[in-house]
Length: 578
Image (cartoon, rainbow, N blue to C red; front, side, top):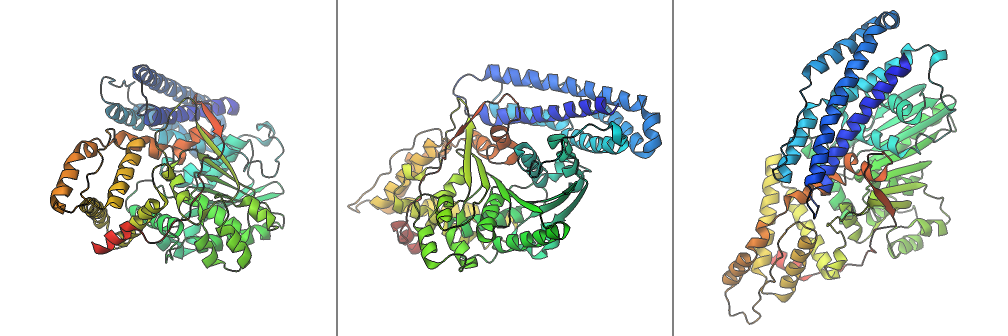
């Protein structure tokens, strides 16, 4: 009985994964396609209809099984069994009939149709049902009839990438699993993905343990699990992505302030998240050691969270191993200011002048222990831009993946388009933007400051386009955005007048008019793959073996060597004058 139901619930979970894969394909593969996509769209449309029919049939079979064995199950847990029967009955009543997309429309409209269809399929309720029912079946089945499990090997849950990314998804989007608490989720995940039963689990929310974390935007969760005689801890630092719930824009703004100010610019930051991440890690390590002196602690993080895993490991080395996904780098200035005695002056100097961003081999030359961190990423993820900033480093083994036979237009290699001084110009503009954004206290004010900054900056640069260095910078910036497909029409070279005979207003107006077609060609479709290939829900289809017929391949390191950037530039003078 239990095994038959388990087959049905796992088939339902696989259908949820297939729906996610369809959204991934439409967000990533279709917008960048250079050929006719009609066949692909027809295939996606046919598959989503098949999935809808299969899902309804599985729910009917599952409901029938529950009813057929209800008397036997009722003896063990009558209330819970009836809850599942009522829940599936209501779910079947709420499900719409099979829907079809209208394909003779723009891709963006088709994407909106698919998102509406996926939303109507109640995938959140199905995920919740699958998790709670599978956990209940473990309890309801007699011990001797339970599915035989392989003896647990220490660290085997951590080595399962698919499991780790599912845990990241839950932490980032808990609202996708209504009625499922964190303890239940990790118990289900260990059983569903790792064929392992957790005997006991303690979940610790970072903000509950360290209340001052909230004002910095830092969030995360620690899972302390007992499996037989083994004790393991998993600390998950959350990235900047949010669920879209009300009020979360403020935390997202704090996360981006941390990434831009502390990491990219290397400036002092009163909202630094790293000290709290270190404090929380030491707290959890102390708790685990009370349970067992041989307890192992693992660090997990996506994007910003990956930076914290690397930084905590470099400064304190508390983790047996770590796993990061699309991580941003560490910043040497931040690390040295927080732990100046961590390395000698000679070693800090060697780190600052190390060629390339990864310092793992250099640390081993210092006599340091191996970091045991795996940094996995989409090879052209936009976070590679952070590695262009001076003082940024990474730690651990790097593994990058991409889609097979597919061209992703976005390039993060600024050095292919800009000079060293021009990269410094971009960083100076970023500093100026952060100064402006600090004035905002509400979401409306934040949007207003962003708009005002962009308008003022563009106008200031255009007004000074008669300066050759500024005109060249604008040309390179436009060419970079065009090469990345952010704009679909090529820009026009900027006009200059070194003689100074033409009035600056006339020259500014002429340049604006020349570029009007370029500005009008903003490629909004580009942002869907840009975001999808960064967030866990999307990048997991590239780096994990999920058998979703999405062909991928592993590459070498995709980062460029960082450069030393001067502090005073022509654009700094322009901003100061304005």
